[in-house]
Length: 105
Image (tube, rainbow, N blue to C red; front, side, top):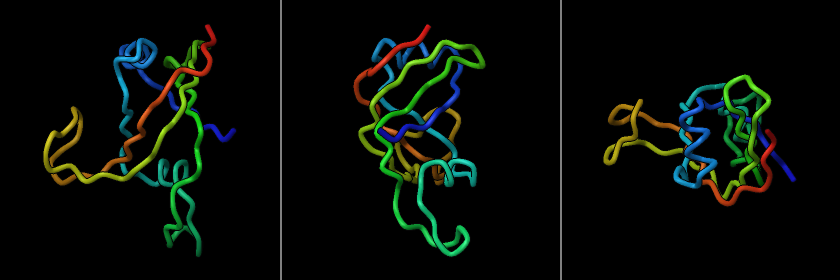
């Protein structure tokens, strides 16, 4: 199973844990481009998203974490229904979340 780890604030951690939050948004930055996508030619050519099966969400910098299946990753440009923290026309990674696989407290 291919996993990646993301640190989230307690508010969002609790929403993911309860099943209320079904998507996680991350900025279109080089950090997340390397974390979520495959690149060739020294990081210049996009070759597709990594086959990430699950995301480990960590509650801040505590040991509390949950592992959630990841149904898909896509890069979205926002024009309608803009999530908090993003602006019209801005792009970000959207991770569609599935079921909780494991919880560690």
